[in-house]
Length: 448
Image (cartoon, rainbow, N blue to C red; front, side, top):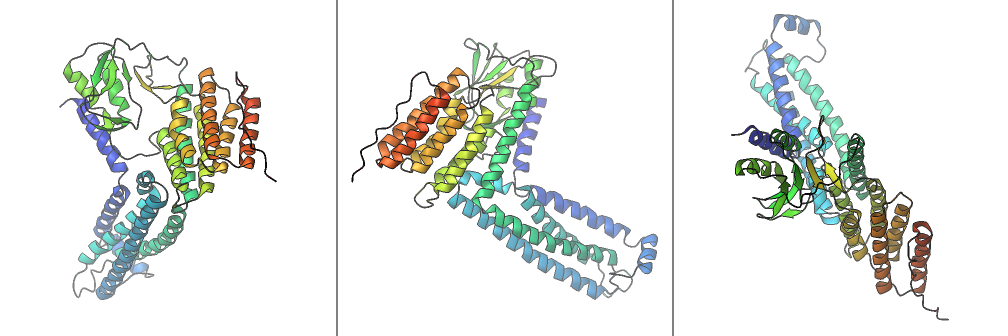
């Protein structure tokens, strides 16, 4: 099996493991198992027996008492763990019902909750293994050090339980989830900006019209690339590649997936195809687009008749406007830089028009009859006009301003609502300086 195949298997396995709810609990439980074996190893060493005879505080001398203490700890912490897992399920169910099912993978992979549950599981495992080492009716071979450590771990579990309750009550608040998505997405945009800043001269998209197309052999949602393996293969075979599909989009088997600047044999093409990872879950820390779409979907869910929370939608629009402002100076392509040569891997990024349609289009559609939502959308566009814009970006913004204006014209009949829209249009005309003035809505005469 080629080295790249091993690399891709390890890459996919790593992504599945780190996003699993059992990742940190398993690691912590294994760590506590090693701690238990270590404590049992040194428990009856001569120097430890001398130390236990000198320090009598907290040392259990009776086997029955030790067994009773450990059994009580196991039962109590097991109850805490069951309650904590139940609370996690409640949070996931609430998030799916009132926010968006797409935020669930991010909540499952929350490191704080995983570490707390792992500490519970590790303490139970430690105490259970320690119980098995206590001999019946023994008065000398009592693992008093291990029992003392178990007591300390039990007290720590109580403190973690209080922290877990505090954390879980915040996790069900929409503001907390929105802020986490916002900060994660902002961090991804900042990372991409820093990566582009390290490139002295940003390369343009190569002329790949005559390049050889390679079709996908699998169907699924394209989410991730094994960049290191692809770069290694491209350098080894002196190739350049352009990826023809955006991250997060569904790929059918047989669809052209990428292009290469020359013909290659089927084995190399197959190895490059293996570097693409397809899965359903969307994690905001993977790509900024996923964070933006999750914020947008929370806003859309808030505008549904069952939730009816336009305030959350307005907050989401404000956050998206900041994220979009960070996206404006970035190019519409992404690269995989190489340390000592020009990049060989290019892939598309959504341009501003596509991004606005995907992120703000659904909010405009579902908030079409809410003047507050439409005004907030126009306010977001107005704020984007204050940033340096390329000619195409300015044209894209004006196009979406016109779409909001058209929506308002169709769904708002109240004269005061239409006046509020016109006030924003006038400000956009002043800030954006469009080549052609955007005409305001017709306002019906007030009836006396």
